[in-house]
Length: 333
Image 1: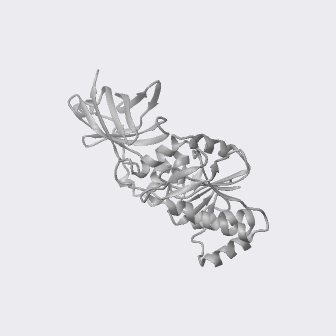
Image 2: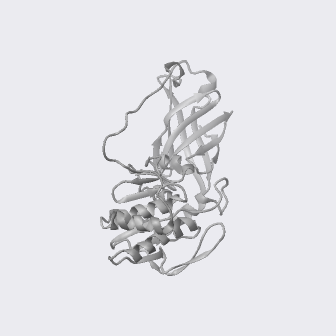
Image 3: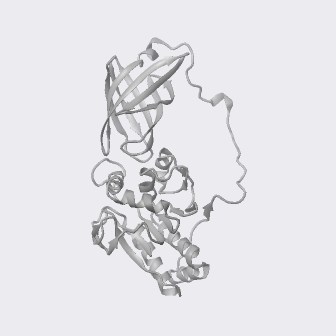
């Protein structure tokens, strides 16, 4: 079974282009190939993003079987936090049974899991790409890093039983590569001729010799964290701060405990019962910057920039393509 997963807000081209390729593969192959649109909920009409075209999902996604599962991305705005934005649509897709079904599919050696464009981010935001090589739309590559995936700038990335594609039109390239892997290059070539389309770019694999890396670094320009002689202005950051972070998918309450140790700024963040250390907190001018891994509401590495006005803290947290999240808080001790 070769399945293309639909969810509310999906991108049409991400789904339709692979469907056309897979359907042509079924026509050319002597093996039986069944192509379906599916959803996490089962048979239903699924509304695409932006133009709200409805497409019929004929069945429920089965993560226990054998074959190919392809996840498209979402379409919408990438510059705001509204209900029609891509991050919100991806998050909504994660909050359905889809996240659980994809987790089960990742464990199934008989399934070749694939994504196009933002489909990679659905896996990443579900914590399923940690330590895996992957690609997505260029605007989402930082978000892949923020979820501890290993971003690779390529048209198609092959990481074993995980195949990911870049921007929207890479759906053709991903689908043709899947056909080549499953049915052979001759059938993939026949489909290319039928569509009058030649695949773009090399498929990246973690195989063979790695290219030589050339490092160009001016030691004078290396940024050094503040380590000694903290001024009174810097010590103004010390204390316990009760903050609220307004993310695109809800508000988070976080307690930050900031102090200095051996001349360096150190700190922790408490969210519920979880406590995380702040990574590399440094002061640049009057702004304190650090990174931090969070697990709720999704697994991300956030970059923080905050300023202090007496006992008030304000700033922002950001992860990749996700809109900046406003942070406000006050010192409680």
